[in-house]
Image (cartoon, one colour):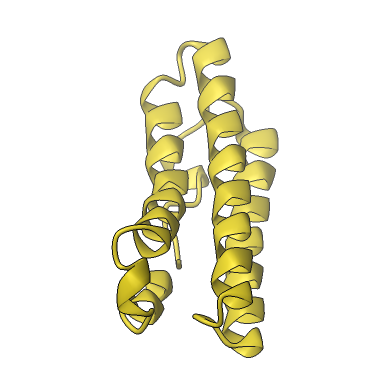
Length: 114
């Protein structure tokens, strides 16, 4: 949700481009994780959705870089959001390695702080 709050202050030119992209890719990480869990009985699909999570994390990182380069984010805000994004991705990856597709849903990290 921090991304949503910070992107409210982006320049009007970015309203339908970068702002939207950052929001969608950051939310997509958690949505793909939920999809992975829903398809956990199918290991290949489970792994595919976790791979999608990683791709969306990378997309969010790149969009945050663009926002910083275009002066829509301060260096401090960029560093904080990038670390949150990477921390969430590490948590998801660690949980996936530890639990695998047959584990209880409470073992997967559901909270997405971006």
